[in-house]
Amino acid sequence: MTALANDCGFERVFVEELRTALEPGDVCLVFSTSGQSPNVVEAARYARGRGAHVVAVCGDGGALARESDVAVTLPADHKGRVEDLQLVVAHILGYYFIENGA
Image 1: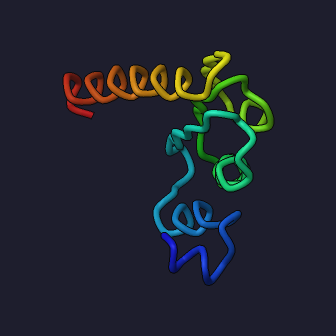
Image 2: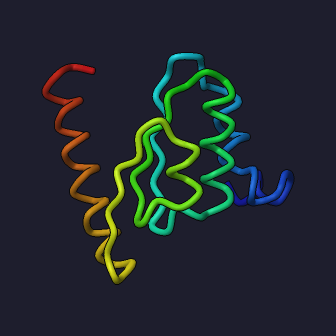
């Protein structure tokens, strides 16, 4: 990722990764504690532009929530608490996919 960021800029690092695998109809799951990270917001914007569905898991939402089809907001007064809640969401999603063979 650092080599890619060096070549194309950190703000596009996730977009460049999506370009190789994202298909219309895919689900792009994005996490950001602030909902303002330019590289994550740009990835969400790119994914939606390619016909993918974007699900964001973020703190207070911000720009990322506006660029997403579904935003799971986890408002908290401390970024560490948002990260803890994101971990719980990630575990729930992981077990869903394990148990449903997806």
